[in-house]
Length: 365
Image 1 (cartoon, rainbow, N blue to C red):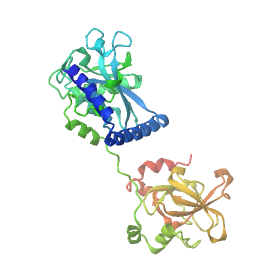
Image 2 (tube, rainbow, N blue to C red):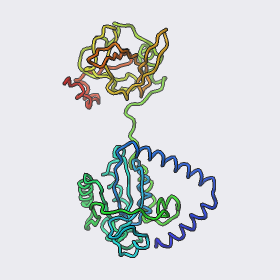
Image 3 (cartoon, helix red, strand yellow):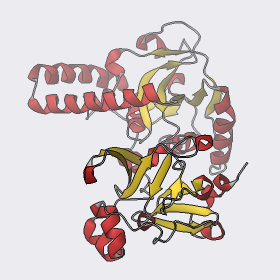
Image 4 (tube, rainbow, N blue to C red):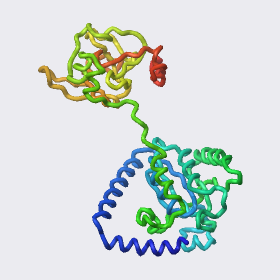
């Protein structure tokens, strides 16, 4: 079945290449952009890999390419008993290889358990050496791990999913013995041949696209109209118009309770009480923010002075300024922050208001 489609696919691929249409160029440009983005992820993050055999590898690769968090795929032949097999050798049923997709994924974006669950939706895990119209041991199903840490996850997930079937599940769950990249015409086959053969129902590709959506941002910048309705006149003036409140006449300059200080415009945590100190300036003073990733520091030459302004990164709200006259035992910095740009949440209320994860930061050890 698939051999016929290979020949047709190669012919179609040559025709498309010869045509050199603008649509093809635009598509290629998008593919290059996506490849660069994925390469950046692979260069900068702890990318993991797992191997899925699920029948014809054309459809299995295309399926995994739809999932957010999958940053690279490659089709090939896994767990056979020869070296550098060709496609013709694999389909001869003499090499023991399975058509397999190497899946590289970012564990910070997608969980291995989700990948396994989605994979099960593309196969009949109870049939041996058969998926769709394809027959032969090269079409057997399996999840092969190259990382010992993944073995428990893979076996536990397959065992759990097996309970949904009345017949025995025959998906292999073994370590990767070997993997050889398939010929170039097999790579990204369904991208190059959209009408090509695939044993996976088309609707599952759309399902895969939506299976791991981007999490909604917990803290988001609001527009000025919304802020004008939400904030007091002073809070708006300070955060949106770079204003400064009066010293010693603001809400938190002498606040000494344990708790967390959040951006008044977004609710995002910025400072904690254990980093607060009495500086004598009349405004809340902190030795540091919870993390530097939460703030932006910019040169400020207004009011006839040269200072470093501090703004919240998410809300882009003016907070105050940072100076180098802080306590040396705390790092030497003084983040002089307007009370009007903050909301204080006492320790006793942090769990209830959604800041429970930050309570351990209040330990003074």
